[in-house]
Figure (tube, rainbow, N blue to C red):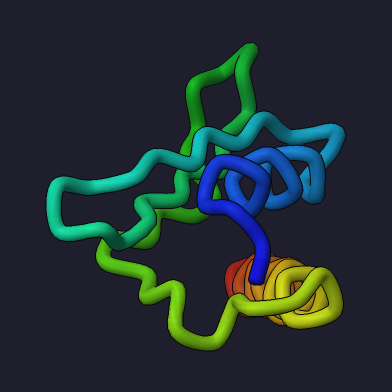
Length: 80
C-alpha cells in the first residue's frame, strides 16, 4: 500500500500544466482541486475521494487518467 502523502504527491504531479492540490480531510478522504493558476479557473473539484481503490501506483495512475479523460470530455461538451 502507498502512503497517503505519496498518493497526494503523485496525484498533484499528474495534471501538469495545470496546478493540483490534494489534501486529506478529517475523515481520511482526499479533496482534489485542479485549477489554472493564472486565471484561478477550477477545472476539477472532488471532495470525499476514498482511498479504498488507490492501493498501488497503477491504481493511482489509472485514477489520474480517468480524471483527465473526464476533464477533457467536459471541455468538449462546452466547446459549442
